[in-house]
Every structure is written in C-alpha cells, then in structure tokens.
Length: 427
Image (cartoon, rainbow, N blue to C red; front, side, top):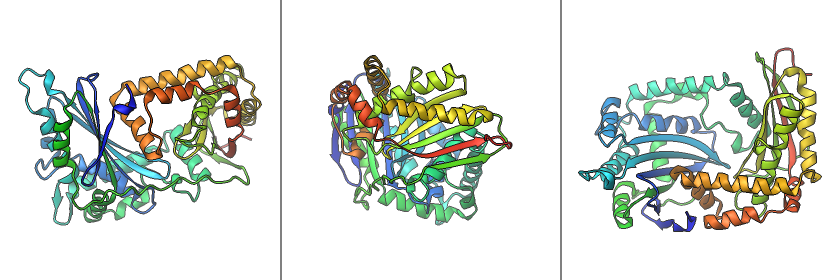
C-alpha cells in the first residue's frame, strides 16, 4: 500500500486523514490530540483518557457505555499516551465492523462515530466537573499503575535512565504522570484541563478501511468539528543537547538481576537524511537477534539475560537495554561499549548491511499491513514534515551503504550509563 493514497484535508478544528483500502474487513478510526510536554498538567493528561472512557451524559455509567459498544457488534475503544519528541500525544482508537459485510447492513459506522463523539465531547459531568466517583476510582487505578512501574525493574530502569539523561528537558517527563499530583486533582480541576485540551490541542483524525470518502467527510464534520479551536500546530521542537561529560549512575535496589541501560545521542531524527542509515545501524548494533549486542554480550560471553537497542525517532536517542548479573557490571559495560566502537570502525560486513536492510523493509511492510501501524507511520511522517510514498521509504532504506552506516555510527555520542543493581552494588 502506498502512503500517497492518503487524502488529507483541513477541517473545522481538526485535520482529516482518509485512507480508503479494501484490505480490511473493519474500519479503524483514530483521534490524536497533540500538545507540548509540560510538567504542569501531565498527570491530569495521563488520567483524562481513562475518565472519558467510563461514562458520557447519554450513557451515564460504565455498564451502559459498555453495552452501547457491545451493541455495535463488539466495537472497541482504547486509548494511550505517548511521547513524540518533546510532545505528548493522546490517541483514541476505535475499530468498527464494516456494515457492508453484514446481512442487514445496519448504519453501524455512523452509530460508532456518534459514540466516539459522546466519549470525546460529551463526557459525564456533575456541576462544574467530572463525576467524582469515576474520577476517584480512576485516580486509584492510575496510582497503582504508577507504583507498579517500580516493580517492573526493566521499565523502572528505563524511566530512571531518562530522568538522568534528559534532566531539564521535556522528554524526561513521565507520560503516566506523578503520584504526588493525584491528591490535588479534583473533578473540577480535571474538567478544566479537559476543556483546555479539547480546545487547544492539535487534533488529527484518521479513518481507514473500505469506505466512501464523501460519507466519511460528512460524518467526521458532524462528530469531530471543534468550532472554538483554530487547530494551530503547537509543536515543541526536540532539543539536541551537546555532551560535555558522560554520566554514570549506579543505584542499589532489591533486585536479583541488574539492569544496565545506556543512553546515546544520535543527533538524527525522523525526516533527516541519515535516518535510514540509523535504522540499519541500529539493526546491526542491537535491533535484531543477529545483532552485535545479542551475539556478543549474550551468546558469546553469556553475560546478559537479554541485550538489545532501540532508537527514539523524534528525539534523537539510542537506548541500550541489558539484564545482567550484578557482579558482571564492568565486563558487560565494557563489551557493550566495544560493540559501539566496532560499529564506528566499520567492523561489520556488506552482507550484514544487506540482510539488515531486508529485515528493516520487512518490518516496515508488516507494520503498514496493520491499520493502526499504517496510521502510526503516517503520523510519524506528518509531524516530522517528511511525507512520502511507502515505495520511496523502502527505496531509501535499500539505498543505504556500509559507508553510510559507519558515518552514522560516528555521529552517535555516549551520554549516560545507568545501572540498577543489588544492594551489594555492581562494582
């Protein structure tokens, strides 16, 4: 499927992206709200999607709203929050059965759009705020989620790496919010935040499936228009910090398996010319089971339970994750850093480059075969200003040479080494 099939139009208070495709038997609708990452209000922003999905003024309790979804042949709505560079994106996703495949051809899509509208624009309120019972219940659930991050030591180590590596930068902020904020969030305060978000966030609506374009435009104009919103892009550009000193942090905790997480700056973002070389670099370095990290740290030296890397497309970060025995800290760290030096020195073959290019292309094709995956690729492109057909994306990946990968490797700078270890320490 070519990305160029997307039809983009600017509407009243939102941008509409229509992707007609007969590949899917369902219709996927995604609404994305984007705002700059800020410490103030971030916990309200983490809490809000969960409150919105519980009740509307028309369906005033959880059971009635769930029943309304179930009556539409099991239509499902989900949401999540994520960082895209220095911006905070809340996504609401709905998957609806295509009525063309039903015997009685009920107007399922329009009913689903109405329900989506209810959730986003007509949530259940009491007085000047949300339903207190729902807010209190969701605050408890969010608090449990926040505290449970420390129980998942891999996730916790990643949070702590970002806390230290991106200190003072918006990217260090926690999209799941902060426990200390919850007590002060009242139903009224949360509703005020909601009104600000629903008016001022940049809203993009995606609809993909076997659809009639004019019908979709009519429906989305009815159910997603925001008369009070100018929908101005409020993009907050990601900083690329210069590194003067490498940070090394060792934190003792009650853990059996040490978590050695390392952060690098790539100075390369989605849309940059070197982005394609970064994809191949990461694949060879730590992105696939055939990578240097996996083969050397885990297989050859048996030092890690896992060892891998990934990159952040809109912030210019490369992150290494490994789980090791605390006593092996120095050796594991040394071998990981050696693999980066090997990449900078071109210590890999043309065959590895070619194999990795095909793996990256296959991964992209698999992502774009899925409706939500395709939407994510398109959204990545749009917010970075680098829109192009899928065929061009794949051609750019296949054009990457070994020299390009070496050049990319030499742009990468070590920033922070973070080690979560046992109480005895890893030294």
